[in-house]
Length: 263
Image (cartoon, rainbow, N blue to C red; front, side, top):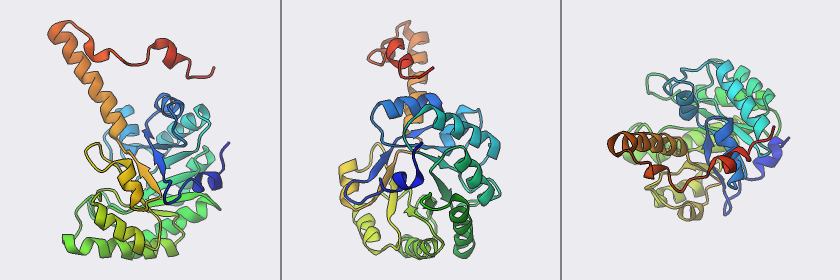
């Protein structure tokens, strides 16, 4: 089993770890087989796969069960998206680490769309650090840009303030989804007390462009799940509209997919 320290070592400026996000064991196996050096879960995609919306509508036990199945199915490191911690951050980190995860994403958004005060979120990060142990990767997420918190001109300063507090609390890196403006990202990387990770978007900067900013981690979030479900919808619509299945051409066949799994 991969150790947390081995996963942590993948986070390097200049050669960031790129994480396609999985939602079940099958997606994780195929992502790893396609060359991903590690797999991260997407909270939204996991929730969708279990018939729920995003936003902590799953229980801790449901999330841990998915993580455990993914860890058992792949030989690469697995990081778990635990949203805001499912109530008890320490208990959740202990549970996913026990299932074999080597890191977590922990966000600072509250259910009402506001952010946890920085001091309170730092305490939650510290709880995750203590529960995960040495080398465990705590990717502390801040939603300042994603949720448009405050005036645009003050968001970078708020991110830096949170980076400093989360670094003191033991975070491994700072996840800043919603920010893809390359000059701003480059400046944040230079000034942040923590290494920066980002959320790539299909219409956003390329992996090479994001790498050039100095970030250490690039995630895809829900993009793969959206594409998979979108393909299912498009193929079904075509089937009933025209009776053809052209949308399904060019993909791996049964044999290729089935052979990716071990008994």
